[in-house]
Image 1 (cartoon, rainbow, N blue to C red):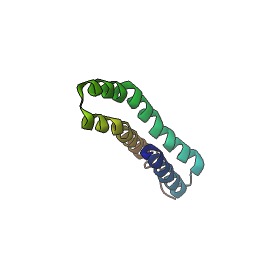
Image 2: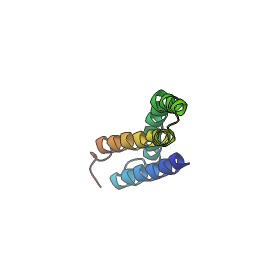
Image 3: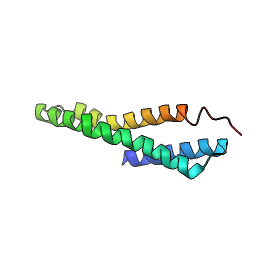
Length: 93
């Protein structure tokens, strides 16, 4: 649920950034969502899920919750870096 809300906010962020620079808005909004979901998905399957399973056997619930949200944070981080490298470097109109 929180990942979907975050992806909508990221799409809006990229949309507004592209709009202010005179770039194609919908394509950049879609690119923002993709740059959020790809690292989110890869982190979730490659690192977070195996660690959550391991912690589940040890009975460590709070740490498992943090790891569950870590993929959202990784997605936000990667999206922010990509935004700074791509859109932020373009001049404003």
